[in-house]
Every structure is written in structure tokens, then in C-alpha cells.
Length: 291
Image (cartoon, rainbow, N blue to C red):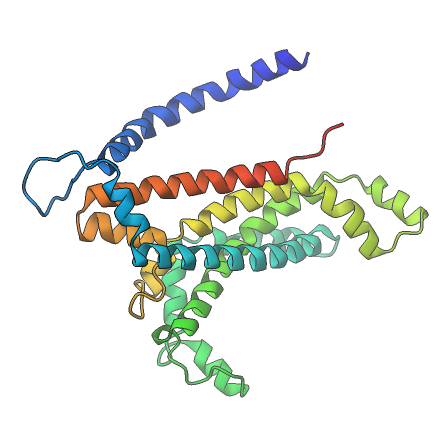
């Protein structure tokens, strides 16, 4: 029975796998080929075989290593904070109250807005001349008033975190809410009969039973955060200086600004490898326990 179910699963996903391979196989293979050759459109000449020199150059580049550190820090902080906020939001939306359906629909609005649009809106809102962030901070006498947010390293990152969280917290919350919906109420009734308080029920039952949904949310959100580009491009352009450059932004510069497809190809390959490694770690750590 288990084998037949597995074969049915493979048969159902096979068309999608074939379609994805048809769309992505050639670009991936061509990019891998580029990474082992000297391919720079600004330099005329044959595309000579480079071996692993592009990878050696990348690993020895202080700019690439620094961008990797920034990207890893952004990913860890943003995913951690956004997951906590999203879990609280999901628990709130799971409770019964008047207008719950309307609120559930409303929180999807930030996620539905294209990132280019939301990043542009937040860039405007953090502008000290035309935005309301500076006005509100000054109105209530809060720290950060009269600050040019996108002109400093730490203030720029703060603005990026806020814009990123505004868009992605609803995405995580909806996934976690779906996980909460399938937890039977009888489980909590049994816990109350056994004398468990709210915190014990949350820690001992809600979190373990929410594990599959949490795994899906973390995998998707972590990969999105690690490959972040558009919000950086719109809000700061990697600046001030290069203080907000991420791996994807550096890869874009190498490809489309410097037209170095060989070196850029090596960066792209490493992005894919790291993303696959992250997904593999999550799958292993958050895999449901089996008996």
C-alpha cells in the first residue's frame, strides 16, 4: 500500500518536474558552463576554459565574503523576527472574534503588493522630507526623528528590515494559520482536563503539531531572504557605499553591469548550492518524527 501511494505521488508530480526541467535545465547547464570559462562580453575574444579560476577568485574576494556575511546576517535576523511576529499573528487570527474573516483577508494585502511597489512606498515613507516616519517620530518625541534613514549603514538596514517584514510576515502567518486549523480542538480540551495551562499547551502541543507548517514556512522564507535583491535594489541600491550589498545584488552587478558571465556564473552556482544546502538542513531538522 505504501509503495503504491509513493508511485502515485511520483506520477502526480512527474508532469510538473518535466515542465520545470524543460524551462530551467538549459539556463542552469549554460550557467554552469559559463562558470568554468572566461566569458566577459566587454572583452572581445574566445571563451577560453578557465577551470576553477572563477571559483578561486570568488572565494578569495573580500567583497564576496563580506556580501555573504551580510546576506547570512540579514537572513537569520529577518527570518527569526518575522517568524515570531507571524506566529503571534497566526495565533490571534486563529481565535474566534467578530470580523475575523475580513481581517484574514486584509493581512494578505501587503503580501499581494509587488515587492517593487512596496519597497518604493517604504523608501518614500522613510524620506525625511516627504515621508511620515520622520514626522511621527518627531511628533511623539521618539528616537530616530530627523534622521536620513537611507544614508547610514545601520539605519538603512533598519528600513530594509521593516519593509521586508511588512511584506513577508503575512505570508508566514497564513501558512502557520493553515497549520493551526488542522489541529483538533479535542487535543486542547484533553490538555485542559489534565491541568495544562496555556503556555504548556502551546509548548507541548501547538508547536510540535505545527511543525510541518513551520517547516514549509521556514524553507520558503529563508530561501527568499537569502536570495533578497529587489528590496535592496529599490531602497538603497546596495549603499551607502556597499554596506547593504547582498550576494544576489553583487551577482546582478557582476552579470549585468560588468557583463562578466564567467565570474557571475560561478556566483550563481554557489547561490544555488547554498540555497539547496539550507533547504536540506531544514528538511532534516524539521522532519516529522516517525514511529
